[in-house]
Amino acid sequence: METSILRKKFLYFLVFAGSIALLIIFIPFIEPPLKDYFSSVFGARDPRMGDPAGILFEQILRVFKVILWMALIISTVRFLNYLIFSTALRSNAYEISSLIRNVFSIIVYIVAFFVIFNSQYPGVDLAALFTTSTILGVIIGLALQDTLGNLFAGLAIQADQPFQIGDVVKIPGKAEGIVENISWRGVKIRTFQNKLVVISNSVLGKDAIEVAPRDNLNARTLFFNTLYSNSPAKTILSVREVVRQVENVSQKMRPVVRVKNLGDNGIDWEIKYWLEDYSKYNDTDALIRQRIWYVFQREKIDFAYPTRTIYIENKPAEAGFVEANNNIIFERLDKVPIFAPLSDRETRKLADACRVRIFAPGESIVRQGQKGNSMFVIHRGSVKIQITEDGVSQTLQNLREGDIFGEMALLTGEPRTATVVAEDETEVFEIRNRSLKPILEANPELVKSLSDIIEERRAYHHEATPDDKTQQQPDKTKVFDSIKKFFRLKH
Ligand code: CMP
Image 1 (spheres, protein in one colour):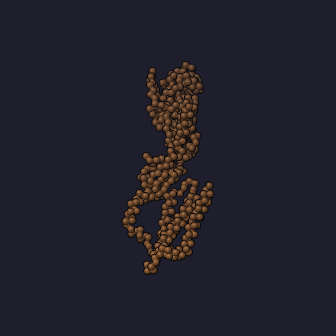
Image 2 (tube, rainbow, N blue to C red; image 1 turned 120 degrees about the vertical axis):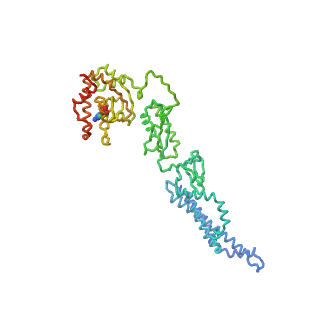
Image 3 (cartoon, helix red, strand yellow; image 1 turned 45 degrees about the horizontal axis):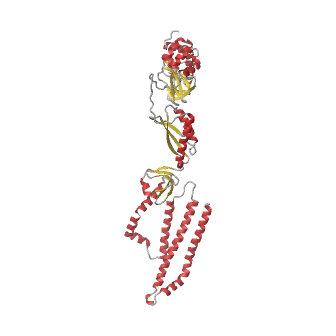
């Protein structure tokens, strides 16, 4: 395709420039006889009057020669322009701006005109004519004021290159679209409605322009909302996965799904994603919104709509309560090995006194060094046990469903020995000091198994941080006794 156009252009150029060149070569040969003929037909009969017709013929021929030479130069420059800029220098990424091509051509035309004019009229100093003619200068200056302003602004844009052909630009209040052409007059932008907007360079120079370069990973943000009853962790996972799979979403960067606001009607979310081809962002946004609808249907997540929820409460609500009911708590506690010695009645009593609490991934449930008067049973999710010594943190262990933590501070009265961080969305049952006391009182075995656990964990701790003086040496009887003392147990 490209080569056939080139061949055609070359043929036209050859025919056109060849004919002009032939004319220029033949003019000197036909000039004298033509001049004689012209003088004899139109010349004065009186020899004293000289040969005005011959002189007129010479002048006309000179102008004609200037025109011929200029035509030859213009056609050559245009052909070379096409050859150099459109074919040879054309890279895949960008076309050479037409402004540069035009400026290059105009310089060649001006130089050529000066040379040709001088060769035909050696006596006339063209440069001096231009420089000394003030009136001409003023007239041209006034006439070209805007044009020159645009030209220089265009040259500044070219030098600075804030955008290239193919980039998506947004000029607030004026246009948004893809840059199609940068000329000496202005920039042509193809809008997303397939219209052309031309903005002059001088106007462009004064405005703030938002550019999304073609070879850049450009990001977009989208918004949606969900009901407060939907789990944020689940929403993040589901939405991130569907966004990732949408065509034109870059695989180089993981989409970000985050809570933007806790709004009146629900949780307001923001999605940030990166595009392969930014110019198609409208389609990509639409596809993402569509996929979110489908994933919400599958995962039973609800969009928030303007709501006003009226709660009629029979008892004061406690923050952090979720829907796990006492039966579920009972079943969970019943499966925890250390509570095995408890009777069903005792386990039920403990379950009734439990608080259900839910934590986001990364949230700390208890913090090292803090006072604590409750222990926890993991119902769902997982946690990591982290200790920090001299500013350095290390993870000692991971605990999961059915495991307990927080027993050390609860049973000994000492500060929390570690920070416990939720790894996934984690639901725990909190057992407080006052509800545990009667059960410990009635179950010496439970005290024994809890002190064993504490012992084991302390030993682990001691191994991990041998230099930590605050950690006590593990000693079985000591732990057992201190629990008894702390809870004022009689047995
Ligand atoms: P407590 O000290 O109350 O608070 C932090 C909790 O982390 C602690 O109780 C234990 O339940 C738990 N913990 C501390 N060290 C370990 C360990 N080595 N393995 C498992 N759990 C631990």
